[in-house]
Amino acid sequence: RKEVEQDPGPFNVPEGATVAFNCTYSNSASQSFFWYRQDCRKEPKLLMSVYSSGNEDGRFTAQLNRASQYISLLIRDSKLSDSATYLCVDPGGTSYGKLTFGQGTILTVHP
Amino acid sequence: DVKVTQSSRYLVKRTGEKVFLECVQDMDHENMFWYRQDPGLGLRLIYFSYDVKMKEKGDIPEGYSVSREKKERFSLILESASTNQTSMYLCASESVWGSYNEQFFGPGTRLTVL
Image (cartoon, rainbow over all chains, first blue to last red; front, top):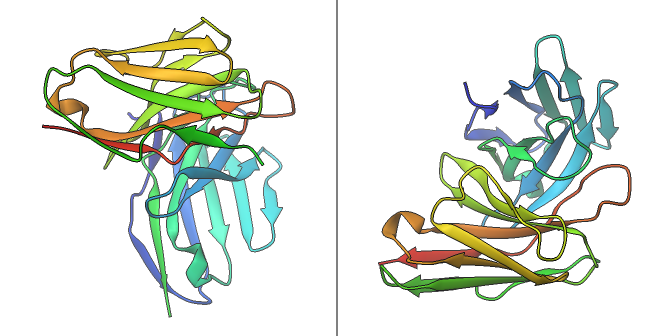
């Protein structure tokens, strides 16, 4: 089993739609995770962190289910500019250093 | 703003050549990383460094070496390039201060080995 596994998609949704991605992880010691966003032909950038209490930032909500070992990212009211690859990241229970990336989920928002 | 720069955006080399990929960060970060990104495989860690002259193997170090002589610069070396090293190479840096580890990435170098 991969350490971090994501549905690669692609997800094709119209503007204004709500879309959700899931990510499963195998390291039960991990207590927090990250979502990074990577635009086409660009570098990854941190989108948000997610802890057991969840995290909400505007239209984006991230949740962690430690019992089932999965993380979710919900995007409400999708915009064209949300089109990107979303990477689920496991820091492995450490504060700094080695991150384990999922292969990414591709999202395309169309008019 | 943190800035991570990489020496080349695109590079074409021949099998057997020695290849140097350079990465420089301007935020005095302690940790630096080299990843490669391939379709369907995501980002995989090659090597990382948590201090000058220190290095640690990542998940796929075979065929690569690194050098960190100065804090701001982290070099990835392909001693004898092979076609299976054709990939996108991403450098990242990270501060050890703060609450969690946000890594800042450079724009990437797309290396083609013929």
